[in-house]
Structure formats: C-alpha cells, structure tokens
Image (cartoon, rainbow, N blue to C red; front, side):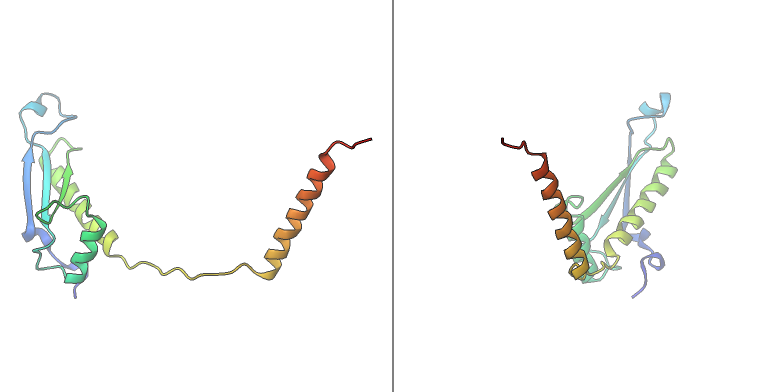
Length: 136
C-alpha cells in the first residue's frame, strides 16, 4: 500500500466556496473566499477498510451522516490560498490519524525508589509531629 504522501486524493475532493467572515475589507461582501473541502471517507477508493475505520473513529465529530469529512478554511483573503491551506490541513489530519500509536509498557518503581519514598514520608510525618504543641 502506498504511503499517504504518494496517494493523490485530489480526484475525491469536493470543493465549495462561499462568502467568508473576517478580513477582506470591501471584498468580504463580494468575493467567495471561504473554502470548504468535503471528502467521502466511506466511498474512498484510496483508503483501505482498516484506514477508513480508524479515520471514522478518530474524526467522528467532523464526519457527517453521509460519511463526508468536512474541513473549512477562511483565514486568507484569497480563495486559492484558502484552498491550499485546507488541502494541507486534510493531509495533516490523515497523517496524524494513521500514525501508528506506541504501545505503553507497564513499569514498576524500583526497590530503591520505594524505600526513598517511604523514608520521605517518615521524615514528613516527624516534622508534623514536632510542630504540635507540647502539653505541660
């Protein structure tokens, strides 16, 4: 299977542009600079079943009921720059989701560490006892 950077998802992207809120001056009310990228995870030919399952599990809040992963960018004044940014964000999200997780190995504290901890507790206890008022 090809790595993510070798696969070209652009044929499966669906873009739509709408009016953006934010910076842009007079152009805000005239130009459609906000870019929305829709990628159908379930019907993708470039992802394996295992990858689809992982992505759907991790990004369940970003995926609608039709199985589309929706990303939006409206930070730039140019539609082209917003489109480039949203594509970059898409690849970053996929790489993050499909990066293999390190399995945590359970460890126990050493005998010396346990002894040191208990000694510290004893010392702290002694200090607290010494702070008490002495009864005549």
